[in-house]
Each structure stands twice: as C-alpha cells, then as structure tokens.
Length: 324
Image (tube, rainbow, N blue to C red):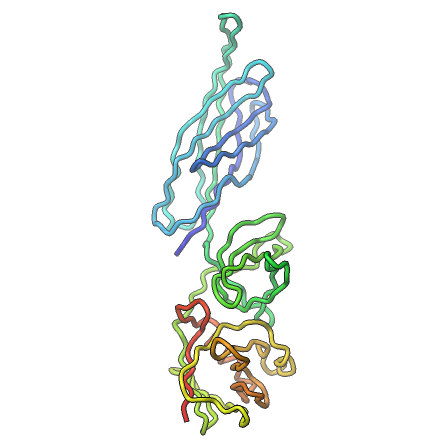
C-alpha cells in the first residue's frame, strides 16, 4: 500500500549564548529548499509546525538525506551553522516519528584582519514525519454521495461511496485529490475540510473482487452469485439481449430513486449496465428499460454487495449475465 509521508518543522529550540534573535532556518530535502524566518530569543523554543515536504512511497524503508542550516541574520555579520542528516522510516510502522538535529554556532567577528567573538549557541531543530495512506476513499455518508468541486471545470459533482482517490495537497482549508476510478477518473477535485479541520476522506477500505450477477428474463429474477435471489422486472418494449455486460460504478445520484428513499436510503444510487446507453440496475416499482429490483426494501443488500466490488478496469464493479 502506498504511504504518504508529510515532513514538518515542528519547533526550533535556542540555547546557550545569545548571538541575536533574527533567525533563518533552511532545510534542503531532495533538492527542495524550505526557508523559515523567525524572531526567537536565546533560552526559548519557537513552535513552527510548518510543512516542509510531502512524499509518497510504496517501499518498506523510506530513506532521504536532509541538510539543515541555521543563520543568525545581522546587518554586518551572519553567523551560520549547518548539519547533514538522514531520515529513515519503516513505513510498516504507521506512527509519527520525530527527528532532532543539533547545530552549534560559534560567533565570529572580523574587521581588517582582527577577529573576536566567543559566544557559542546551540539550535535544536525538530522535524516530524506524519503518515497517511496516499490512497483514500469517498465515505459512505447519508445517501451514499459526497459533493466535490471538479477543478478544471469548477463544477460541483457527486462522487459515490468508496470511490478510490489519491490525496494531492491541502490549501486554504480545502483538500485536493485525484479521482482514480469511475466517470471522473484522472480529474483533480477538492472539498472543504470539516469544521474541525479533518478530512472527509477515509482510509483502510478494502475493495472486494468483482461481483457476478445473473438476470433471468423468463423468471424475472436477479441472482447474485454466492449471494441471494431478488425479484426484478424489465420493460417489454425494450427486451434485454442475452449476453455479458459490465456493471459500472455509480455515476451520479438519480432523482428517479427519491420516491423510494424511505424504504431504501440508497435508492438514488444506480449502477449502469454496459458502458453506454441508459440501462441501469436500480430499485423501483416499474421499469422503463432498466433492470429494476422490485423488492425495494432489499435494495440495501444489493447496494452493499456492489458498492465495494471492483473489476480491474477502474470503471466497473462486476459483470451481469442475461439469460432466458
């Protein structure tokens, strides 16, 4: 499983002699340089909590080099100290880790070949590594849909529960992510963080293998392989042709299911059959060309079976076979 590792500059501790209070910390990781300017007095600790890098890895051992420089900015003299270190993380142990680096600076002053200055100070830089799954999922809340903003079109769309996404970054209290499957695959989307600053997205979801279903035209039943049998109906003026059809991930909330939500809270979640046209698997009383489950109160069982099932095509939850 891919892991996302966020590195933060947690705090700066200033101890020893004072060499000034206008401090710059520079942190270089994988050719990316972060600069933090802070006024801090000797004998104090400044809490920074600033992100300095975000990385993804599917390796068990994540290892990178880091170079940290501390500069006391002065009109005439800049006192500088630096250290080279290494960050090594076992990604199987998904706990936050802290790395502490001590940098000693000796004050130096010189004019016309004359040197002076005896002050020695120590800066203690604490970095923190935070773990999260790079791959996350849309939660199954309310009626099974989450409204997000599609960035390239600036339109609001609804994503179905358990759709797989990849977190990109957080900016201005919005979380940005790439949609990895379904009709909006590869699009960048975003959503405002919750009031407490946490994400709507969830982790530790396990998709199941593709679902297999059989619809009998003559018996008017849908059988979920290794599951149950459900009463169904179709439209006599648009008969189904025998054969195999993919069952897609849900595309958008269908208002036609609203009247059944009291009996089936997920009634607006329809699964398109095939990759074109307007034939869907859904619940209801009658059919206008779709495959309709007439046992409305049992729709939740089918929803639960299909919503986490996946074919390896980034689009489908399973296969429907239509027989006599």
